[in-house]
Length: 245
Image (spheres, one colour):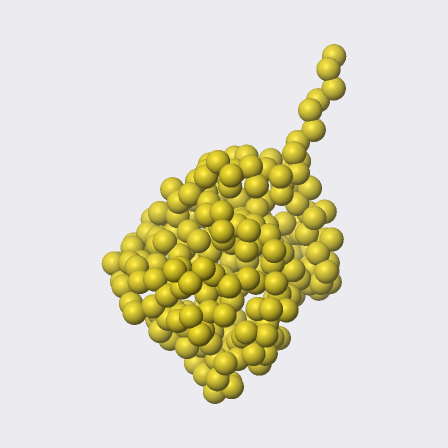
């Protein structure tokens, strides 16, 4: 009997999927196997800071953006507050099931944190809320934690509330192709998964991006206008080259 062929690592599979421009939906069955989730657990625990977050089950209460507007101009917190106001957003947009109890795996905890911190990632990565940039920010997350993203997308796809109009853009991202540039930005910024974003809000945004290894977006991609298919809302872009570097 031939020995079973070991599964590729999550990172290798993610890079392969990105190279062939797979859609986010196509990544789900490839990366959601129990073996890859176990491999993901090990990779996550090796990220500096993540093991402590996971052990503590760090999960501070959601921040009210309006309470952060008074933070210094140029700070992460001020930019986040203005971004949320600009796009009329509120924290905890999508109510995915929380898995942060004692029996939560590292990957399940990462799913919770990535969902809860989604808008922080928009600000850190200079992503607008257009349908196009929603695919881009998910490609960024795919570079950081491909299995955790696949698990989130699998769970979100069957969530009873996903059929609501306000989540149309979330339903639409499944057909989006993984974007190479954003994937590479995510792989370079894996350390984000070990950060306590809620404790970094006073830090200057440009300094925080450099500390976390977040490379600037290509100038042509910064501040692109676009439609968010949840009700057809389109806004003047939030980011300018000065805010994205």
